[in-house]
Length: 117
Image (cartoon, rainbow, N blue to C red; front, side, top):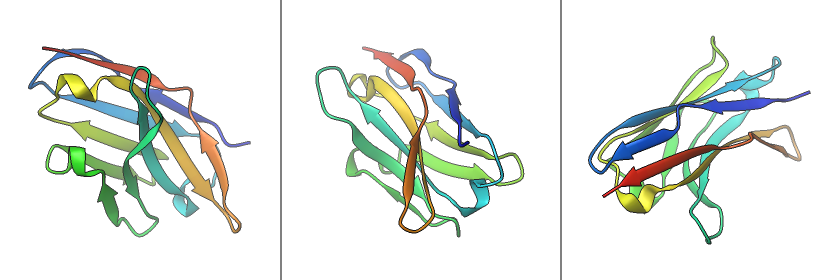
């Protein structure tokens, strides 16, 4: 069974940094496309960043140049380094995995990130 567990959220002042981690269970990690989504209060969930099996990345325009997604296949972990945080980055951040064809989708439980002005 695929399980994703996020950590690293918290309260930070505007301009600060946080690093989110998502640990994955099982032997699937190296074969999965991994991503971070977020859901701001009262809004829909949105893609923040994704990283392919080969390590290619893409980002939402709102976080380009500030956030960096990376993965460590040996540790079954994907990271999201967030720098230059803004109040509008406040959201619950979710780890996501896409695995197989057709792809099955898995979600973590989410971690809260709050940026104060």
